[in-house]
Amino acid sequence: MKKAKKRLITQRQAAEELELSVRQVQRLLEGLKQRGDKAIVHGLRGQPSNRRIAERIEQEAVKILSAPVYAGFGPTLAAEYLEKKHGIEVSKETVRRWMMGAKLWCGKRAQVKAVHTWRPRRSRLGELVQWDTSEHDWLEGRGEKLYLIAMMDDATSRLLARFVRHDSVAENMKLLWRYLEKYGRPLAFYMDRASMFRTTGKRKREEPGVDQDPAEMPATQIVRALQELGVASISAYSPQAKGRVERNFGTAQDRLVKGMRVAGVKTMEEANQYLEQEYLAWWEGAMTVEAENPDDAHRPLEKSHHLAASLSHVETRQVRSDYTLRWGGKLYQIERRAVTPGLRGAAVRVELRLDGSLAVRWGNRYLPTEECMEAAKSKGSQPPKMARRRGVPRRGSDWDKNFDLKKGPKIWQAAQLSGGRPEEAIG
Image (cartoon, rainbow, N blue to C red; front, side):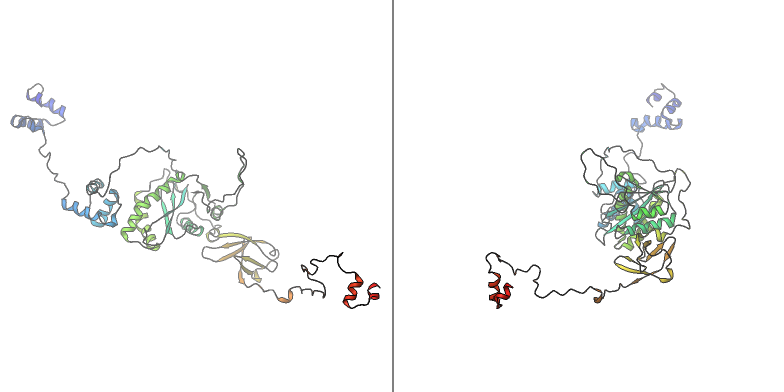
């Protein structure tokens, strides 16, 4: 501007260099003549913005976030709840500044973490589903202990989850049943090496340096069910291998726990209702992504697939000669109308269903059974005890204790002592 004032360059050249209009350059030159170098400074510098949020709104927001129910909330989650619950719409950075000023949040300096190469996502929906359970104080002491079972698609991060009281085979099978009915059969499930997913054989400790191949162990009930349904199972060797579902648990232990605290959730039923209506709905809209390939790899259930039969506890029993079998310490009788040649002594499949019912299958046919009482053994069927002969000492008796044959009396002397005649004793 001083060059243009001294006419070393034209006003147009000054405008091009400052990326301003010629008219604005003319105004600035006029201001330089009247007010000096201060004319270059913007007139609103140092004054509050016209779009500044009122101080009373800031005070109200800080008062809300200071309540115990919002303890531990981060700026992002706090901004969402201020808008959704209290109608205060501000950016997360503004909330961050408010919370740091009120000492409700402490900014952390970014740390350089070890670089971990992530496995790329699968290309299609349903190619791989990660399956895991998280144990956490989900209700923060307001109710019973709960477990969160989750199934997450690797390609899209689509999530299906459920709160349960026990991390058991039956509860995991119930969620698997729900997944199969809702989405179909994926190509594979990716789970950890817990005992319900993988049977680990015990081996004796061998000499150092001697490696042996582990013996092939029978499949667990869940893996057997997946095999019957035509779904592969893959075991992960580390939590990082199934990192997507693990990171979901990290998010849930922060956002879901605090959301249930604000909602006053105290029971498992209320927790599952909040999970379905609030958390999973938010996850579907904010955290899922589009798959690289739009095709769906899920396959529908076929007529040969029987979910109640596959998703049950299955064992093998042998039919006894009276067409009965044992299960769980009880005796079950196969009905007479179901008896056919070859059934006696045959191995049958016994299925303990998730609803508690029992089904017995032989080949492709289910056999009707009913619980029966075992006949008590009669006393007469036991072999009679043999009477002990009179005069014969009992086994273990001490009648001959301290007896010495050499120091004892002669036979004729013993006969006299007993009252017999000597000639009879000698004869």
